[in-house]
Image 1: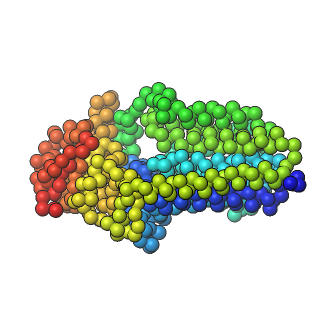
Image 2: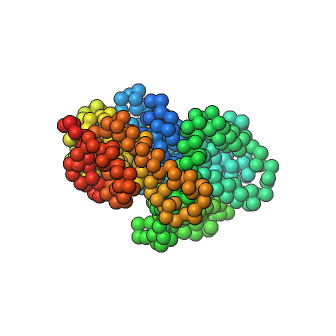
Image 3: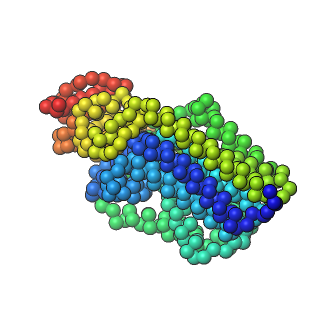
Length: 525
């Protein structure tokens, strides 16, 4: 084949090919699993559903997470309602749209602004930015993933700006606002973004570049997000800023684990091995691919929020994993081009052929596996088609299928988001209480046992009877069909208040499952 340089047209075709093939591959998996969703994304989706119906955050649904993800999730909720499709399916399609945004934005920056010598390395970056999403499964749709997909194009734009590239006002504002949405999803992400920006400032010594349209976009969106609280209902602000936030600030340690479990556990150490490998490869290619420097900082800086939270929950290190994947694919592409003396179309064409072939074969294999599995009839939920039984299977599924129908209220009184979610969202059930879970009782218990007595602590602990009363009043008002009560430790939280005798006289225990007692409302068949 004739040796050719990578023209802008070639780069456009290569990046578009990678994006289309991998996004289509993800869509195949999504359509094969229309009800599959993780715990937190399902919770956030139900909060968004309640907001669309007129609910007020932290009044009609109580959870400590900042509300931006709920606002963002109203988009798939509205589409779901318009097309009468499972909200889980639409949400996952929305995530593919974010994948396509990240890849197309990176491709645009590559084609329009990047140095030709780094072209193939940038194609590796686009591949890595898409590829890491395929490993998340039940963590697909976590805020950490959304942060990576929305922030990454902004990161690359900032690098190109430091290198001297020019951008229009519209380009700067679009990339800045979308990047800001990702950063504002969690306060931890602000630290990562600041460290990446600082690394580029120190590397290029161009402080004037800090004043740019994309940074204005970041600041404007962040300020509007903060200002919107000033117009929120007083009860919403009181519950969130004067109860939930200070309570979790003092009691979030309830779920803490040890450092060994955070990093050295067999199911978690692989991410950090990959990060070390990616960083090591990147340091050998920094002169050939400038994007590797901010990527290394992004990856290593993302370890800090993971350790600060000290929970060892796998989804907290999604940015670390994503960064590691992008470092390896970008460095690998750079190494390959350094070994090839002349740029030739044979190299990217071979890579794209492999990506396409593997995606096609993998799609067929997954389709065969899903079809061989037991299927759940989604007409029971008011939808068409079927879904793999494994995606809704749990110790509680049979109870829900036997005693509930769509839009029935159900309560899981659990000190975790699971197992109430994703089940309530998957089965189109309504929360039977404003408390979507009772994590707040575990938080208050920790404060009671570990915090130094103070006026603030006393005020927080004084809220516990109010939480119990809210559960009770919600049960009496909403009359949930089923109530699942966690045997340990939740029963101990409820017993001093004679909760069962006072609020659950109309309920009969019908069984136990996975550390939960199952109660059914009398008269419900």
